[in-house]
Structure formats: C-alpha cells, structure tokens
Length: 311
Ligand SMILES: [Zn+2]
Image (cartoon, rainbow, N blue to C red):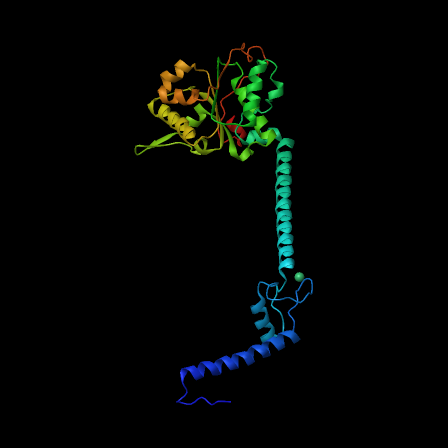
C-alpha cells in the first residue's frame, strides 16, 4: 500500500481514499448481509426502501447490537398508524360517552329535587311549584311560545300584564322547565326581584354599588321591573343591568306590570328598545289569578334565597 508522505499529491490522496472506501463499503455490505435488519412487527428482512429509519437502525444495531424501537417496514408502520388512530378515536368516543353520562346524572339530580334547586336560584317559596304543564289558565299558544324559548333561551322575553295575571308564575315555570331539561344548571340561573335587588344598592363616595350577580349570571329572571320605589339612581342601576346583559347577550326574562309606554316613561328609550328587540313581549291579559284563588299571593323575593326568612 502506498504510504502517505509530505510529497503525496491531492490526486494521489483522492485515489487512496477511493480505494479505501470501496473496501469499507464491501465490508459494511458483508456485515449487513450477515446481520439483516428485520421488521419488528412482521419479522421480514428489510431493504433501504422498506424502512424509513434504515441507516439509523443499522448504526444503532452496530453500536448496541439491538434495533431501535419502531424499526418496522413501511407496511407495518402504516398499520401502526391506523391502529393508533383507531385507539385515539375510541378514547375520544369513550370520553364523550363519560361526559354525556355525567351530564345525564347531573340532570337527574336536578329533576329529583327540582323545587330545591329552584329555591337555590332565588325563586320565592310560593312560586317553586310552578310548572309549564300546569298553567291551564294561560293561553295555550303563550305556553307553547314559553316552552319553545326554554329549548333555546336567548335575548329578552318580557312578560307584561296586570298584577296577578300570572307573570311571575309563568316566569318561575319557565325557569323550572329550563332546569328540568338541563338547558342551564341551577348555579347559572337566578330569579331576582327588582325591588329587593334595588334595596341593596349602596351609594358611597359617589360610587353606586349593587349586587353584581344579576349582571353576569348566564340566565336571569328579573321579576317586577319598575315595581317599588324608584329614583334616579335606582333607574340608572336597572338601565345598566338591562344594557349590560344585552351587550353580553345573556338570556333574560323580565316580568313587569308596566306597559311598554310606561317602561319608556320610567327607563327611557334604550331600555325599551332592548326589551323589544327580540319581539318577545308577551302580554298576559287573563283575569287576576290571585283573586280567583288559582295562584297564591306573592311576597317580594330576595336574591339570597337560601335564607327562608327572606321570603
Ligand atoms: Zn413489517
């Protein structure tokens, strides 16, 4: 073999390296022939075209004597991918089933103690048994409209009519249906009487503070809009509530003894237009159900309904 010296030319070096490489390649070929790379899954020997990590696998085999994990032929790699996808799909389906079952269980819990859950939303005791299928004195189409809204509560619904027409009763029945169907969880619903809510409004150092829950609760029944004592501050607080719920697109059911003209007079054009924007102002014109004895008289409710003394 030619020795490399200081006088060796580049051409000679290249020739030397080429000869050496031929030898090395032959040795590697020989070694690979004696140590075939086989597929982990099907066991078949693989060529460079069969395996995506062919060179990497051989270098690992040379240094550690074992194939790296995942040394599989392309066919088996595809099968592994399909299997992985199948397992992932099964896992997701199982998760969906579990979520659905847990939801059903929670709905059952609510259904089993509907009146209790209604109470937690702040519904006064006299209205806790109100149910949509037990409103025989209300027009059938009105009850059907109400039922349709419970399926997909959105925007504003306004129940107007004289005192005793059954507005609060219907509102409580609508809320009961929403809870019964699991459309909303009790935790996300509140039945708030305007006079009781406004009684808690404070004005300190020029700041008006009110219980913020009705503003942000996902579903609100705002009972008796315009009732009780009103002054400029109280009107502004109510107007803000309506406007903020409108801005957040939170479903809101309002009951009121006031006509639309009277709402306009008391709370101004913005509140009136918000309340009317969904075309769901339902007028209850029926005779006084309280006088006829079909509905028990109702005292004002307070939002912190857990305290029985509040009612
Ligand atoms: Zn294979």
